[in-house]
Length: 196
Image 1: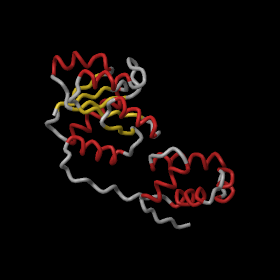
Image 2: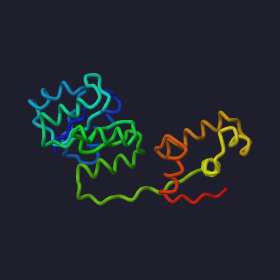
Image 3: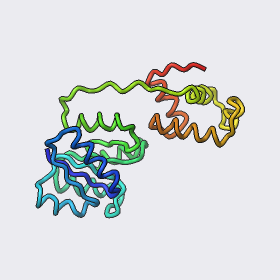
Image 4: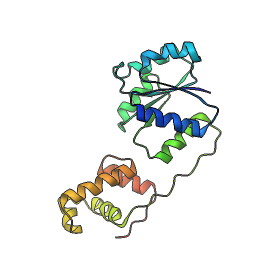
């Protein structure tokens, strides 16, 4: 399988390439930093079977990169990588011609599982690792469920409001969410048992 990563962040581009090689040693992975370089890469290495495309490149505007690749290479699978969890934006990616949208905010294990399924659709699906929350994180989730504000959480737990914000941001990162509602939903979906 011939794969192309189009990503302008060299650190993320390198990490994705390393992860793909780790998942499949015989995968041919080429990396470029903008869509404009894809035609030269195709001349040298052939048409990619899979393109992992960053949505916010310097040489594209909105979904133009997806349109351009889909027009030039209709048989290639296009996976958009972005930081949005907004369903409307994800739908726009699909409407532009993307086959799949992968959030860059996913935990490493979830990202690895999605990429493994792309490379080898017949690979067994791994069950997500159980979510382990610290006692403080469990207290935060309970407080959020009870509708407490940051100030209220701080008073209830005997900590400063700024400390509450730090704990919430860490919790959101661990869950791969951006809001209180999403955090509660994710905790419920993952079946976390809360103890106060």
